[in-house]
Length: 419
Ligand SMILES: [Zn+2]
Ligand SMILES: [Zn+2]
Image (cartoon, rainbow, N blue to C red):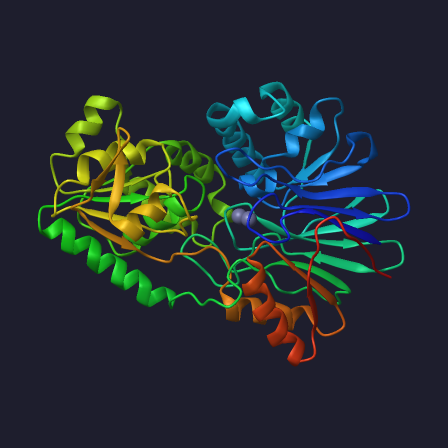
């Protein structure tokens, strides 16, 4: 088995891996780096590829995949939820960044129509490889992949992974069996998340503090996953004020409702969805802001979307709250807001008077979670780390090497031969 890392070895972005046996070439994820101008992984001629596996719908894992569908229709293997979310997110990506992309809607449609739906727990074959998907606990539809070649060598690719239960999803399935090679994400190497139950309590208390003082709370959140996790938390605590959801999170929630049986607690999601309302138009959006309420809306880093509309209307008053609930990529408006307390309105940086706070509701395993996953993979496996910052990955590598695990950082464009 040969493994070549095409991107994503030293940062979060453009995750892409080529895995080859004697007769079969597979691509595991083919994402973009989400900078102002999207960055792409290394190029592979589509004619050489036998299949593409997408672990989940985030653009850092899928955003470059339509490029393979300009001239050919390569079988695409993914879960049904990942298919629907990938379609939604790629079309939105084309709307926002189409000018920079080497494909158009037709290629996205060719890709979507090449899908072969596989769900966690199913075994299937692609050429020489036996393939199995396992739940990865990261976002709805996300999977880990196990590839087994004809000699019995078993490779695990975690994709993005979360080993703890959240309101929306069960933690990752770590029942791997024997693993010979593992490729794992390491976004939070060297960093721990706060304890979930404590974080939820603090969040709900802060939300009530704003609402009880006649304020409104804006929660900018990713449309896939995080927005619905937040709705579930608000619903689990029986919030007694109106809750609105807006932007693409509405469409993404309707998709999730169809697939609610795949969630950890479908009853909680249905209750949360029943509790939430969404504005029917611009007039309605202005009307809902007349009374205390919670608004959950993308974009999660305040980089466009309906969240900006609400931000501009709520930021000027002390009684309101702007609660960020995900990691803020350096340089994004959300990151700048946390660091400076300012937000750009019509090209001018303005001081935000509303209370701004960050809550770490991550969907990635924290440092001890990554260590637990490595312990499950075992000491016989060669482990490659990717999808993280180099200095943090080195910390994790050194720590587990001391305990006897074979762990290294993946190098870009180097081909590793494993047998
Ligand atoms: Zn992800
Ligand atoms: Zn990712």
